[in-house]
Amino acid sequence: MLGTKQFLNRDDIGIILINQYIAEMVRHALDAHQRSIPAVLEIPSKEHPYDAAKDSILRRAKGMFTAEDLR
Image (cartoon, rainbow, N blue to C red; front, side, top):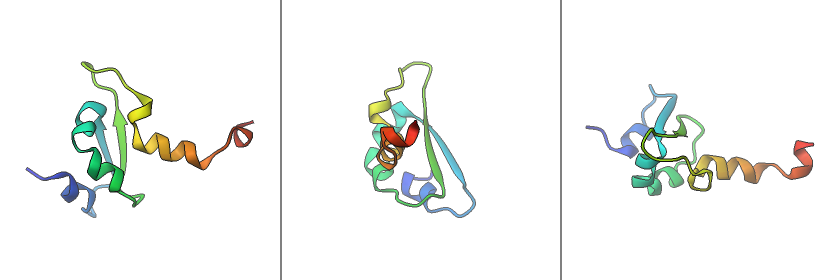
């Protein structure tokens, strides 16, 4: 089984879909990931509710825009 860092460093993977519950277990690796490819998208799971405050990609995206930009 591949580890998180191995998935993040593969050239043949463009997008990684991971549910947020599992993402919390490897948050240190996801937060350290700076490259745009592969993109890491956190999705809700059936068993656990989605918490936007825990989504590192969403937090980064929010930092790129101001309320004025979205008007």
